[in-house]
Image (tube, rainbow, N blue to C red):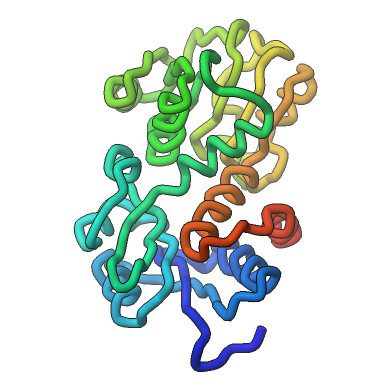
Length: 269
């Protein structure tokens, strides 16, 4: 990669960010498309500082991760309607000095699912009620899916269900027999707790498409059990890659090299 005085700077802001795969992924995409650009990781504890850095360094854009996705919104010039509805920004685009916040997690999750079929009219059970669940659930409702939220904490689950116009069900006693799509939007099953599953799978049938947002390990215990039951699956790299694809395309206006970006993530993992 040749870096000179015309190189455009991009990056990810969060705390911590040393584990981030985003630099490898985006730099591979910049190289493949011939863009004079570089993407770095910046560990910052202050959301305002992240926005100031984008502004004062004339960065082309930035990714925003934990814990700044909500706090960063107050410091931007504009926030996209979807990001505002979700209450989180993970992408900043610099349009001639105007900093606009977006949420590419929604697009990433929907593109990952839609590779396997339509969402409209399908019964979707989503496990979890955190930030990722809010973004995914918003996308499901926008696409016309019927959404049921299952969560360990009833208060959080019921609150998110109300916000999204969805239904709520406790984790205990959840019947997966007539479910079209099952999504794990929690960290259950992530390394080092690789044997954990977010919900009993006794009633799971081969009709269900199963998605897990956890990508370390690549095949979680949930996905392994789903494959054994004859289900189609979507692993955690799919949402991660497609949200980055959406970022790249917003920043550059170019079509992202999706296959290369996915290979880069798989090699890094």
